Image (cartoon, rainbow, N blue to C red; front, top):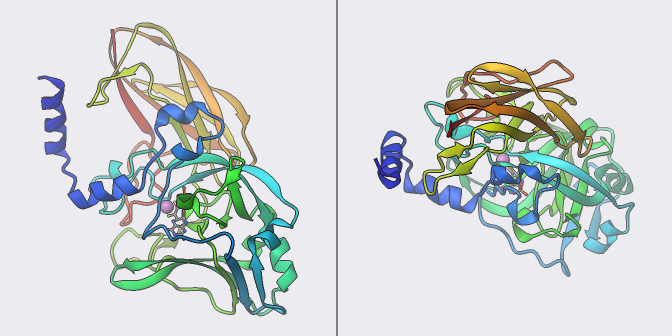
Amino acid sequence: MDTLTRLQAMSDRDTYSTAEIALSNRNKGMPLDLLRHDITPVGAHYTLTHFDIPFLDPETYRLEIGGLVDAPLSLALGDIQAGSAKTVAVTLECAGNGRSRLDPRPTNMPWGLEAIGTAEWTGVPLHEVMALAGIRPQAVELVFSAPDEGTQKGIRHYYQRSLAIAECQRHEVMLAWAMNGRPLEPQHGAPLRLIVPGWYGMASVKWLTGIEAVAEPFMGPQQAGSYNIRKSPDDPGERITRIRVRALMTPPGRPDFPTLERTADAGPTRLFGRAWSGEATVEQVEVGIDGDWHEAVLGEQVGDFAWRSWSFLWQATPGEHELSCRAADALGRSQPLEQDWNEGGYCNNMVQTIRVRVE
Ligand SMILES: Nc1nc2c(c(=O)[nH]1)N[C@H]1C(S)=C(S)[C@@H](COP(=O)(O)O)O[C@H]1N2
Ligand SMILES: [Mo]
């Protein structure tokens, strides 16, 4: 069979709708070859946007802070940038990463394993800005609002998410205006976004225009109606918060175009990848060669909430091989070998497997 016939056979097994393809052209992943970079180039960092990318003019931009605060504030970008700026490397991952590997595949953005990226975010701690407004004791959460609007499950709404006050006080949660030393790109939330290190990406609200302190837990569609781990449609589900431990590998050898099937040469081959967890430090990465697990060597963490590299010297022998990798963190959490299915296809950290032909 020639490669195009094989590609056709693959799509017959696994048919994607044009709507899913349209979604995955708008929301792009980071090619896993770029795992090599400690910091993901801005243009290669994954993006996920539910609705349209809003246009916000940095000159007239305001962040409105209100609700249960002593002094409501209307801040220009310059007012926020006058704070004590810091730059921190953070690994972001979409909660839907790995969704298309589930069987049956939940209908939503059909991510492979590329919904990741690590950037150096520059901003000010959220708690410093909120201290200027003074959060009243009755407040239980902050609600973060953006001007991007659409419908989901039939409900018209703006993108809004909330966080408990204690979470908002973590010093690493920030209001960021720069990514890798440059002003935010429109698709990444220009001119200002929230960054919640350790949490899946949905918490890091882009195009942030409002913060409201509220007395009751926020129940908006992106909070209560989505981002829950539900085993069946009527299961109330469990809220998605921190990023589960995961290791990924740069596919070794060379790809065929357009099937992307991989071939490598026999002999010593250095396998390379990254591992991260939003809950604790990654302490171990193992590499599976045809089902036998071996210890990988770990590199330094790029930041407290960023990935670390790993590598392993593989003695590649001729034939067909299946390579995989799995990480474990300081809390003893690891990655499942089999899928742990849920309705939305969230938090799927089942191990990556790569088939390689060695010649
Ligand atoms: N305003 C707004 N913020 C948003 C989203 C959105 O659609 N609108 N998507 C969220 C999701 S689901 C993810 S995974 C991250 C993606 O951030 P990135 O596109 O900068 O990588 O942004 C989050 N913030
Ligand atoms: Mo996401």
